Image (cartoon, rainbow, N blue to C red; front, side, top):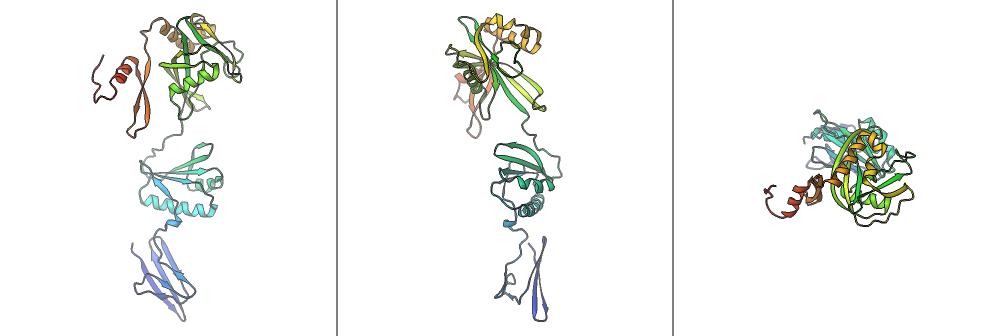
Amino acid sequence: MEILKSLLLFGSSSWLIIFSASGYKTCNSNPLINTDNTHFSSSSYFCSMYTETQETNLLQGIEDNYGGVKVNLTEPMTVESFASKLRASLQEWKKKGKKGIWIKLANGLEDLIAPAKAEGFEYHHAERDFLMLVSWISDLPSTIPANASHRIGIGAFVLNKKTREVLVVQEIDGHFKGTGVWKLPTGVIQEGENIWEGVLREVEEETGIKTKFVEALALRESHKSFLETKSDIFFLCELEPITFEIKKQESEILAAKWMPIEEYVNQPWNQTKELFRFMANICLKRSQDMEYVGFSKVVTTTSRGKESYMYCNTDHANLLNATRGLTSTSTSR
């Protein structure tokens, strides 16, 4: 960095003016200039060389994998200090060619929202313990992803093969309240929960029945079905019952029972509502003809070693599971 230094003498007073690309700094009170012309001091004033960027005046962030910066703020600071640091940081990030800037504000830092929005930041999403703001500062087209776009729902087809009865419930609240419709146990996947884990949990919570995951029979996607703007992906899963005694969830379930599958399929609701007729027919087909196959889970690992699940045709899933650990699974059926 090139710095231009000037020493001005005005009678008994002296001024040292240090110029840089980002501004200048002046100091007075009879400075004593060091031999390298970079520092001066006096009995009443000490001034260090003015640098182009000072770390204490910037927000501390980490670079992401997409040319952006993530800033995590957890400690209180004044609005004035934050606004000053944010402006300086944005200048620095723009010079470095950064793109998306993310600012994560912990609970209690809501007063920093206004100065951030004044610099072009927008709401991205919020959780119970933080708010995320984002700004695209590059001249390139923005690639900032939308916030969570989908909710994952699950429905459980639990069939007692010996009696050909299916586990059904009536709900206290919700869309089916007061309809008298017997429906499959359903629910929503929780954050960080696998699909197969979520469907087992929902069935046990609602009915007390312990089950084993068999496969995903079908999936359905619909839009603007949650919070007016969010989409919904629904997985219809087959489960094998391990226990059979029902203990319904008092807070959500009005009634639960084992119902002959033909009776479930032939309910007027299932016959007049196309989506439910399709799902009921899939369940009936599965109970009659085991050649109908869905998707089974195959446990795998990501490149970072995290456990993950892939769902694929059951026949091929069995092959993949049988050849686990081999360098190739080129054998086909």
